[in-house]
Image (cartoon, rainbow, N blue to C red; front, side, top):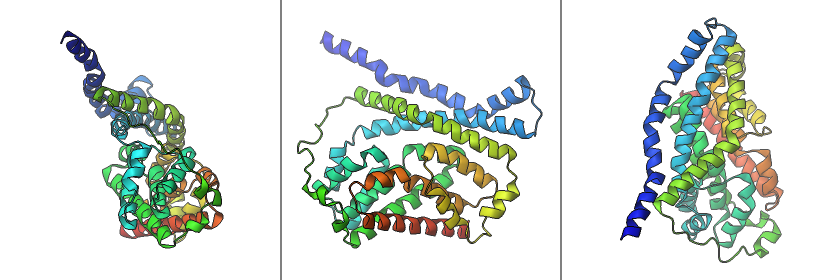
Length: 347
């Protein structure tokens, strides 16, 4: 009995610490603008309204805001992810009908760990489990495009309305693109060696995690993900701050505004060859919108950069033939164009 009490007392700080730190997070987050203004106007006594002043004000306010949001949301999603191993994901999708599978795969892509480097083992695992190609592609499209980093940055820089638009349209693209690829029966364009490979039968060992363990997983996710992307956030916000302070609004508005019929296709053509992730591109997109770029065009640019990155395509070439990769790029591109034009028309 005494040992149990000691064990419980030792475990308390692990799960209590995030709740104890939450009030501090709230106080910091809601006072960031005041702190930024105090630093710029009162301590540094910079000239209000100048290009340099507004550039620094933007940078000093946005960096801690985005970082605070990232820490909170990545921690929460990290805890949720502790319930979803790759093996569990495969079992959930196994045996589902095509359209149902596309919906479930797209939803799972949001909360399941994924990066370009894991495309090959995930693809092999899905094929071995008998999951249709189209369902697999719904997962591969949703996972990098609609993740907690993108959601945090969108909420922080645009608000909930734009964030929900992005997530909902991203899910629609993932679901319909995967469904169409499945309908085209393109299994023959998977590399020949894939079907002869047997991924380990045992899969991942089922872990018995305590709540403390899951809290630790959340903290580890914060350390790992923020450790990898903080430099992209700083660069992205720095570029955005420069554009915020120095780029004339009329310039970008005339080039990529609602009145330009070519704005959405041009944004996608610019976006596809670029290599970035949500952390690097979304702060730049927020300033593009501020400078007159229409919402649909900005969303199309952002989706093309994140969902159709060259490194991911190069890695997928190891398991797919060019015909299937071309169809994948074509369908996703058409979906992004439709989203961009639709929102330019409606908003």
